[in-house]
Length: 391
Image (tube, rainbow, N blue to C red; front, side):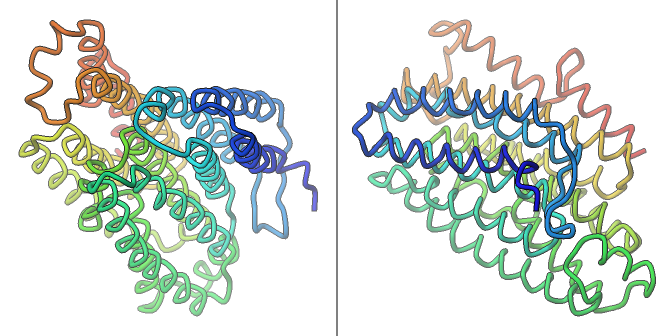
């Protein structure tokens, strides 16, 4: 097994424990944040220089162009979150070492999800992400809303994981393998059956929770509102992107022969998710709950591209993911900075924002325009590319 293929993953693991160790030595809160950012920059440099491809353990882990892309994408996203967490953590949270280490370990899980070539590997990677997010959602332990967010996230996530694991069991029983390529070969040979369809529905339900698709979105508003704001940003963009990364890898590499079965299912999920997410967003008065329902609507757009999966569709989905991720991070950066300045969380508190902080108001306006998909903004280009790919 060529461990040289997974140097970025090994470094990411080591860097998480470096932060733990430095924290034990008594480093200051801000210092740990800057250290985490520096380590992520080093990781990105090493990752860009890492160009080899191959696979480990007969296809359990794949190192290809897809994996390389997300080896850069996820650490870059985490770097952004770490940078705008520094002031927030220094003012509002205890135990910064654990906070930054958990962000890095969650990033490791997301990278492993991108490279997974087998269902059990994908499931273990997904659970690594989940375990980190359970703790991060409830990290403000003296805040009742944060505690509530953590408990709700754990309970609903465990239920979704059980459905996903049951679906994996069904699919293994029908195909005799958990490796994506062998599953595709078995489905192409024997076609799909009622058992295969049940497995696909259960897997779609488990992954639907991860990407916050309706009706598996119940956790999203409460977790977004209760978790610390930088954690909400991380869950909103990086965690959702990881869910779609796994969905694309699984459905394109393993389940493509059964597209007649899951294509209509994803189309239905996409239509319901877009409709419900956007309609319920209108009723919200809390800025983070509003962004939660906005992210649900965005998940519907991405699911529509996944329902018509092809090479061009995958490119459109990836472009949309990148555009949504960095636009969403920009919105949450503005929310975090404004919250640090004023403490405002309800929409009424944003009245007069242009007079108090004109540059911040301008940045937030442009970010929201991009999320809305208005012309001349990144969101418009991403939405147009995804729509053309689906067409």
